[in-house]
Length: 299
Image 1: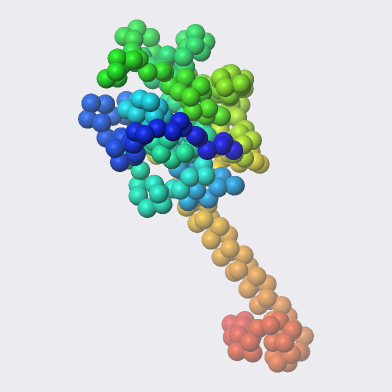
Image 2 (image 1 turned 180 degrees about the vertical axis):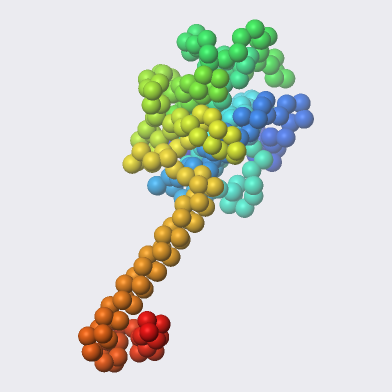
């Protein structure tokens, strides 16, 4: 995977997660309900073969601090994944934010859900390739604010690709249900072709795939993005997993009942052939009391 990040030595003590939280009263919350629900599906269906749940962190609308020279600069990805880091900050605390120079690892995947007025922030130069259905029109433009130094920070695509070198970057439009995929090539993103009829992208570095799925989640039926496994199967979310476990228990119970019924019939057939109960018990593995019970029930 990615090497640990190294930053220039400095005499100045850089801020940590506790100094750089996500609860910024000047920033608005999630822009719409889709931005709240979709990340839950991504987190619930994430299952990595090489990393247990205690060695990954997923962030949703969490401040991602990326520039030690401008420690207040941050982006808020709609969803991102970091592997080979403790689930808890320093293995003991829930994260307030994700501070790259403090953690020493960049994300492996970032997903942005395309929002009106923020197309350039999410797509940079690739904004020109938007199709009409990707985003609503006739909205005022969104501009990136300067920080206290007066320097305009880079847009998201520059941060994820050129600065953090995130291998996999996805942008999904809930308006057109179009999934766009960008992969690093010599330090810059190149857009990769995604089949519009079967939009799925396999990520070899992680051994998992991301695709567009039409179905019900959280009581809403529409197109969502979710993870799939090496066999091409959609990885179940929490509700689906519970249902599968219930169905498995029912199947196991039915199998036990069928096996017991077959064994009961074998024991009765042996008795009807004139075999003593003691010998029938030895052959079937049933107790003599159980066989007598079967015999009485058949009378």
